[in-house]
Image 1: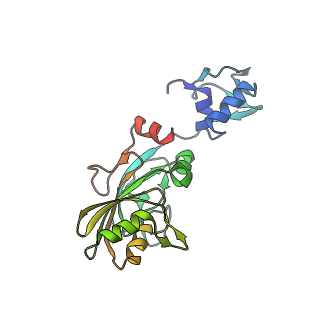
Image 2: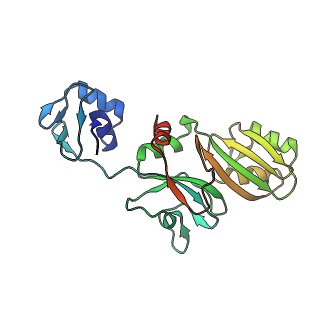
Image 3: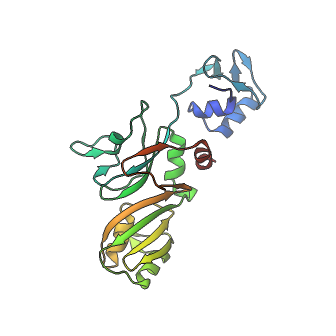
Amino acid sequence: MTLMRLQKFLSAAGVCSRRKAEDLIRQGRVRLNGQVVVELGAKTDPRTDRVSVDGQAVRPTQRLIYIALNKPLGYVCSCRHAGKKIVLELVNVPERVYPVGRLDKESTGLLLLTNDGRLHLKLSHPSFDHEKEYDVVVERPISDGALRRMAEGMPILNTLTRPASVHRIDERRFRIVLKEGRNRQIRRMVSRLGNEVVKLQRIRVAHIRLGRLPEGKWRYLTDSEVQALLS
């Protein structure tokens, strides 16, 4: 393992955010191998160094994992579900990971999994405005007016959906980009318009694209993809 900036180590170990870690260092509350550190450029080797905050030892957490999975039909986005196939059965890694957000059992496509709580917060909290793009096929031809209503916002679940970007592919197929994730939102919107979804695939989360990842397969996110998500 290469040397890591002290504030990054404290954040990765779950002590606090990187910005808060910088404050702790400036305040002289962090020790590296018994010595008080006040310089933000200090680095540590988590394998051998001893780090403490306010006298309490800080241990490195397990390796942080970031995965993109192409979820097939019939799998639920849960860590446990008696009698059901779960997405974790498709991912063969020693670390325990969990889904970021959800795709319902009847939907397919891009699902992110991680053991990093920071990423889960950033992608699930609406204030971060991360986009999610879906390819949708409906049962009957859908009108331009119906697509426009989805783009402008519709009442479902006792609230109004946020404006969305909607692009027609053909008479029964369109793509929609959301910045929120209400329960079965697209299916509910289409149903309110008097139609039904027959195929729903998520093809993008933020800047991460499903691409040509085969159904049921997974890959690790690249370092640049991870950094862009966490920045």
